[in-house]
Image (cartoon, helix red, strand yellow):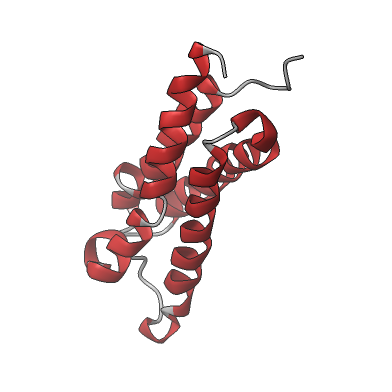
Length: 125
């Protein structure tokens, strides 16, 4: 892999390892990271933890040869952008939820932006 791909490889390892953290924080501190909904519906948080943990595992695997995993990387970028956008709108529209704008939303948008900057659009020949 060319030298310019090392930042992408490092980012894949770091963001892959960090993927479950924001949602795990929800489980540890519902007041700071969780959403105000029926407390009997915590399966939403567990679902997010499971999905982002598995995504993180695959991002770490993808660091070995990012060019072969471009679709996974671009899926991660676009899904984080969409998820962060939806969360931002919901945080603004739900009374008392604006704290998510400076916690959860950046936790999704910052990795997406950095991966987008580091990832090529297509395979190089």
